[in-house]
Length: 117
Length: 113
Image (cartoon, rainbow over all chains, first blue to last red; front, side, top):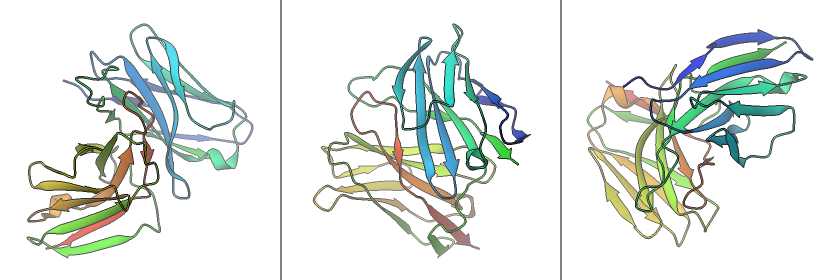
């Protein structure tokens, strides 16, 4: 079974621009979560989508948004880019439902490295 | 998916030795605690998890210990191998059903041949 794929793997943008990142979950997974990873803040949760609806949201400004399509693929958008948005953006997919009280294991993609100049 | 964190604490061990990686967590209400491994160029990979009502769980070559009294979590790796070299993160779920993981800052494990 193919893993989580993210495109593009690397991206360079300038301040003020916007960017869209894409994530294809593992087949059969309906939940997609996004995380930002930086040296200073570590791994931080951005938001989670399930059945095309945002189900959870982290503490990020409204410039960060996302969506999910009917095939569970997800996109993340960052508008008006700032230097501090330079980071590795990770997508994780999971079934989207707990099983017998156990948490729903998340499987991560390789990430998109975004550099803002 | 490279590991980030230029100033991560580093644990250096000899191949074949046992490794113990520690983590302090903050949310007493977390229902599950999870260990992830992140190798250079890859995203985090699930290793093992433990529910808050347990104090020990064993997997293949790994054991996770949970001490709720002091809010401490540890990952023990037996017979550490060069392939275990990576950054290790603990994470907590906060509440069963939530997929908004809260991650620790990470520990870099270096295995010396």
